[in-house]
Length: 340
Image (cartoon, rainbow, N blue to C red; front, side):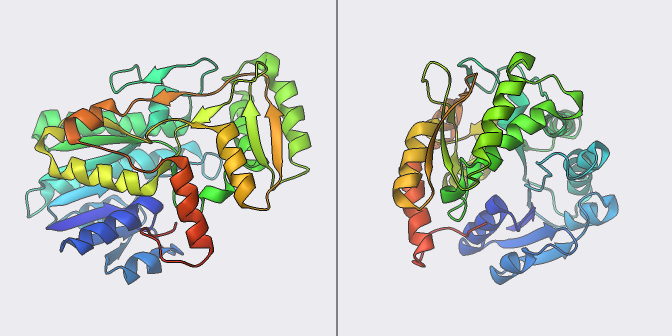
């Protein structure tokens, strides 16, 4: 089959392309002009189409003649572009690809949208589990653009019968990224984002000064690995997901007709404890271990039970297995994924 992947040079896109080409499919990949990672996709045998993802005419044309569209391209980090540009990159591009699928000389058999668990607003200070039918209440522009894209896809399926599937990913890591997580700069990003532009911080305005003071101290050791707990000693947790599990789940969604019209959380086996992950990283690297007590809790759980029951999704890579692969990559040994 002929398959179009937007964002083909990214961590998921490149690994998907590698798997699909290995299965004998032809992969066409959309990359932004000047993308420094485009050569990575080219080396895999991808047919490269260079176009600004907000260029509607070029993006529509890229979908002509393909059997499947997998829309991976997205702008995630806020502050790099204005909000209007993020809307163009994340939502307008979805409309352009859907229009391209409608106009394609070859009927499109499946349209896969990569979305995010952030549409649930997972930045909460109490323990909660999110399911596919949980309320979607985005609290930032990125999550909003993804929810808009989901609704656009549903509308095109309802109006035109396009076979759409939505996959909600969470905190995906490739081998070259695993050993660098839980650093003070990463932790600071969430606090700074939550308080920028006069936002109402999700963890409560009463905790802002204390949180910023803690992180200011941590930034003195920028390579530290942070074992974060709340004031009661409860570890923070996050659904770090191995790129190999995400690719395997995405392929299952492509192959299973029951996935049409559905949304699935495509996430890790279990939430990863910050304290356990930090200890594992510190024990296997020269990064200093730091116990960090933040004035609030964060540890959302995103259920993957629907993907397990409907698609046969069986995520294989716990955080310790992710670290094993990362160490193998660091030693220069062959690994079963394409680094980001």
